[in-house]
View 1 (tube, protein in one colour):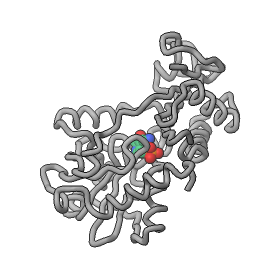
View 2 (cartoon, rainbow, N blue to C red):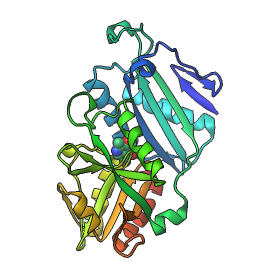
View 3 (cartoon, helix red, strand yellow):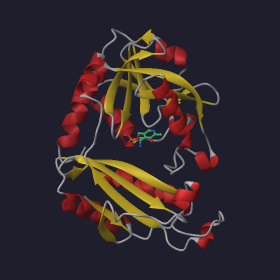
Length: 287
Ligand code: PMP
């Protein structure tokens, strides 16, 4: 396995960063998770735009142009001879001193790891996941703005810990006002009376690339889509619930906090979106 680390391709064992890296010391950095389907990088441009926007927002100077970054992604995939997999692209503030000050970090560090992906078993896509809502609240505005895909994932990790405790794969996070925001690393959708709903990102959700693709596919398939605030009550009484994300793709939910959703299996709209999504991702990764 070859890992890109600051201009060099090194083995997994050689891929080490400094203990003074502010990504490690303070979570000062950003990342992207990207899929490779049949040798193509899915929505590469969209992921890079989100990365460079996150960088600009936190005043992090990425030492590569977007074109150079794309070339690095392609070369890392080539060297690992992967046709299908997952790319983790990390840009950290780089090594500095123990103080917070990013001015002491002269050079951002860029890391690209590509791997095979361990996702949910196929059975879960048909039968749906059990999930719970958690007490963690999605952080909004300022530094923990969900629009910035930063290395500060402690909140999401606390959600994951609660999910583990309840023995479920993903969990639902509300925002401080009690509106449904997203999962620990997935966006959420519900379906009621044939209409598909997803929370507007301003409520505290990352603007997921998969989410945006599903919004496009709803239009293509003729489903009415509304970006509207909703509460846990609406989730409990929904006909269908599903999560979307780069790793999870489109995964149905069959139970939320002990309430059975719809028929207790993946619903028809969820399954048709999943089917179309899988067609789209394998068509040159282009949509
Ligand atoms: N929300 C959070 C908090 C995430 O980390 C992710 C995964 N990157 C998502 C949603 C889904 O976004 P995407 O579809 O771009 O993977």
